[in-house]
Amino acid sequence: MNEMDETEGVKTTNVRLRPMIHSPVDAPLCLTCQENRAETTLFNPKCRSCRDILASPLTTVAQLFAILRQWTSPVQQSLEAILQQMFSAGVHVDDRDGLTDMTMLHYACKSGCRGMGDVDESCRMVTLILSEGADPYIRCRWTNMAAIHYAAYFDVAPVLAILLQATKAIDVDSRCSEFDQGTPLHIAVRNLSYQSVTVLLQNGADAYIKDTAGKMPIDWLPDPDGFEQESETRKLVVRLKRILEEAEPPDADDSNQMTSLSSEDGSRISRILQAIGVRVGDKVIVGGVKPGTLRYCGPTLFADGIWAGVELDEAAGKNNGTVDGMLYFKCPPNYGIFAPIHKISRPGMLAKSQSKASLIRLNHGKVDLGHVTARVDSGLRSSKAVSVSPGEEIQVSDRVLVAGKRTGVVMYVGETEFATGVWFGIKLDRPDGKNDGSVNGQRYFTCEPCHGVFAPPSRVQRLNACANGGGDEINDRTTISASTSDIHTQMTTEATPSSSIVIPHKSIMSNKHSLTRSMTTGSVGHRGSPFSSSASNSLRLSEGMNVLCSGEMGVIKFIGSVDFADGTWLGIELKLPKGKHDGCVQGRRYFACRPGHGLLVRPNKVSVRGINGSKLIFN
Image 1 (cartoon, one colour):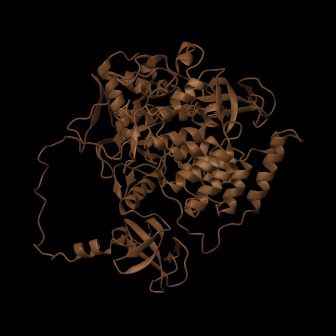
Image 2 (cartoon, one colour):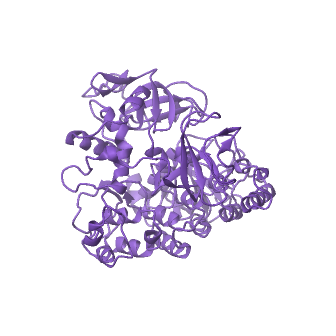
Image 3 (cartoon, rainbow, N blue to C red):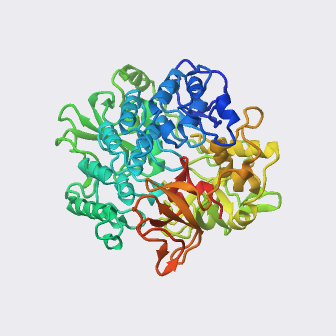
């Protein structure tokens, strides 16, 4: 389990062996900037006194993360200085920012965004971080994005090339739930990122994979006829369409290739490999006797569980990486072999494995455990309802809002086999889920495919509570502390079972994300509660606000409902002519802007200072 950073004033000098999550704090400001706090709350690398703070041994890793997450050109162009200082402070290469749940690698990938940071500096830092042993498969638990997804989203093609070279492109088609379970190619096409699309295709990206919206990457391209004949956007769309149409379909042998993993499987596999001390591409020993190279790790169709696919050093295997017509990896015939993951070890760990294997096995016969019960009845196995606040509960058949953006009906409340604690099983109104009510072969409820999703209590709100609780203020210290604990519980890899689970008061649920946002722009207390009590005044999306949308800067011109779809939508006027209209869609005008500059998007498609828009808006 990750450890939280409890020390705010002492800098770590020794590199830790395990990553941790650093508590959210404000970016430090010099006295000059504090005097001008009414004008800005941003760290200013151009200020000499701020630079002195950056280089100070008293500046903590948490404060350096706070500086790094500020989405301004001066900060992003100071990426190298900030990261070098973090290394000097003894940061683990896979440490996470407690506010955004992003690692240094995630920040370095997005820092190369055109018009914001320096691409060459971003490439140098990504190379450095990877050389220090960073895990390129780690995903942000807010956005479900790995480093490759951030690089594709912000169109940092040189960084994409570095990442794909480091991973040998095994994750080139890894899916991301933030983008309808689309691949990096889907993300790049949706943002009209020509260079990133080119790099991905050169590294074997499958242009024919469909996301949960039923679209291949090419289907996300706008109609070029919607733009002026000589506009740059039209030319870009035509070029993208041409190279996607020219992309070769998967080979017959590759048509059944197993390349994509769910976010749950990916996270579990990453932890397993980290525990063993190997990565895909490393030398391993199979069963204590056969040396080879790990080429695949993940689920298979021929058996349950996690399996390792290994290319042996000699022709002592059973296949070429394909089993029952399903391609898992490629190697010469009879060099491939599959083994349960516990049969894999690092070279040099053989003696330890053999000593364990040499233990005498005693057969005590089969023991009937049918009468064995838990010493303490937790009362959570088949809960009918979970308390939201005194007199208010969420129970089966309630309509709820999941993660602030998806609506559905609660079908199950209770414990699960895939994680500890109480979970809600929800049937979504739209096919934006991950299952049909069953996980790992265990059925909890029944619904249509891709309509089912499981969420912890902290991510679920009853719809009437959402409507009524959005303006509540948080003044009670205990309530704030409970919300703080709730946020960090989501960011740990293990949950602690409890005899009773109570969802925080609806004011916490309504303002949980506003608490998070306030740590970017407002003050964060350093004693007592780590959050400011002024959470109700924190950042929210509003008309006139500058946002980042599809890698381009824009201004919100409209917030509200639309005729062509449910939910809340944003009308954005982009600074460059990379939109689709002038604010008028299907005969209805939502706002006015220049032709080709307008977009209507979901709140989760924009970000403000690195924070996803879905966390800055209340339904």
